[in-house]
Image (cartoon, rainbow, N blue to C red; front, side, top):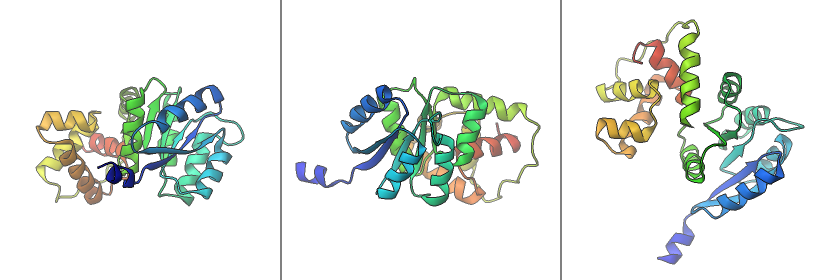
Length: 221
């Protein structure tokens, strides 16, 4: 049993934060988490890009406000040059501009530094699996921002969405995470993820932020 556990590939993670007092303890704690290996700790965006180039890297846990190259620019460059590497933002900033800039640059997750270790680990694993994770404060701000902006012309949802997929999109639009969606629909989280993957493929939805926008624009949320 121990051999099979050791044979499972651990997710390779880069921790990026310009403050050593944050970066080093976070890297140490994450390194003790099952299934995660911290392969580098970076103080700015240039060090992140260098660590990814040296690779392999699965996920970057990215601070936003860093010298030399900030986290948003580093995220954009990773999205363009290394789309296989998922970025999860971990920052003290939850203002609208920071959230939208990071998500537009390609971040798959956005957490504030109020997040606990298990929340961070869960977000890393979800991002590596292609899922988006936004903490509740970020979801609420994103929903408020989308709802107060003049609506853009909505792309119609495809006609082949199943009733369940429309339900899932409605609940995403209301800001519910996968676990809450599963509880509300009395299905497993794995089934929710399957519906989301199918929904995103059919409707050409890029990420969870895009799903929120489409749900609202389509009158589902």
